[in-house]
Image 1 (cartoon, one colour):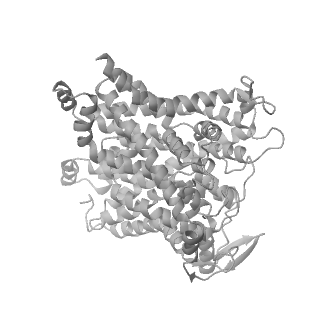
Image 2 (cartoon, each protein chain N blue to C red):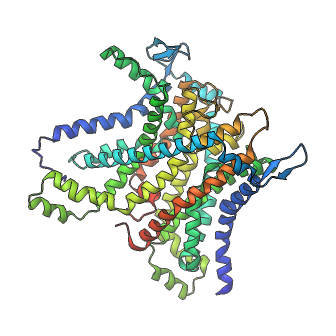
Image 3 (cartoon, helix red, strand yellow):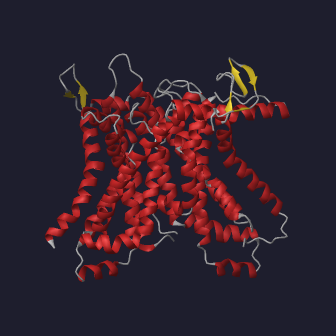
Length: 297
Length: 291
């Protein structure tokens, strides 16, 4: 059984080479070098860019922004998704139809998510409506305290349907006799909600998995902050829109006066952030193995 | 069959809340679709009120026309972008799923010990910062003269999506009865025939769903495409942002109605797919055996 084993490993090695080894080794190599004077290629500089990262205030700012953005997005998505699912379950007719309407944002690409909630799409009209109907003052979307929550709202709009679908799948999986018995015994609607539905949702491994994986995704979020940096004209570094991904993007496309494009620095930040994905993967890995061995409950 | 009594006074409130949610989820999409069919006399003064230097300006009215769609297809050649996205998406998806099936098969049924470490590494790679992939890709593709080519983009998306494809396929493979594959192997199947005659036919629905899912992911991807493509291999989602214009459109002012029209065209096929997949999305995203 020796020979077939090695043959069987070939696809695994190819994927690992293309998707792991190549980007990782290249990034680490670049992060330890500098682009030398014309023609001289890469010059080894050691940990210079890592030191630079820890003394750069834009890095800390973007890190904090990303963390807040992630927490707000994941909490709001969970809250809205679970509420939407609980509401849908109260419908006797048209539940499937309403569910189909609610999942449409999942088809919207993240960059289009930045467009559909933009000032010309929603906020200008809403402003004129509120103004003419209720004589309210205009919502100033150029204020960071307004547009940051809107960015989170756009992210929630895109992804809460996924949390809703997960909740529906979990609730449909609850054995019917359980809560029918509860009803017969005279449990009120609220008791069924707090003693049957909510524990089922929040104890499910599917929910934990979704929260963990989407937190990682929100932490890397790029498209919606990028779109908003255009809507509110925040193209400079250090703007309140800057998540880590957007900060690195801005460094890459905005030529800086002194040292050209800081490619090694960008690689150093990305490599350092690998630590975050490693840490985040530990609980995710534990969940995955439990789910694959013992199911979702 | 909800748990609540139909005579419950809470019922009207539930309908109101569901109506509010419908408005929340659908309104932005409806606006985008309508904007694409609406021309403005001046692109600077789209309908609505905006603050220009603190002073509110109002311009309104809807002038229905197909001007953005005609411009998009007849002048800007949006169909070329659609073709690019399809070629790149199909290429990258085929490779990711092909290698993914064999890797998942090998690690699930033959080399089980290495499988767990491999799963861990793939989960890490699913969550890496995008620039960890982008900078190496940018440098390699330009030095190999593959920047802004279909082959280059297929490689880029293979790097990005191979871990996701592998993980989804591994979660499928995991549910296959082990005895079945072992029986096939003892009865004379080799690895190749076990995959092609036993595993693939059994998992075909799941593999097809994975393929469709990977196609949607590549179709919607923006960051890699915006930095690794130029005028030749530009994909749909970059075109949507650029309002299909010739510039890459990074921090350039873009025409909103052109974005809306392109966004509508990009959205229709994906929305159809998502409606069909719906609850299967939960399993695709969470790697859990749910539906």
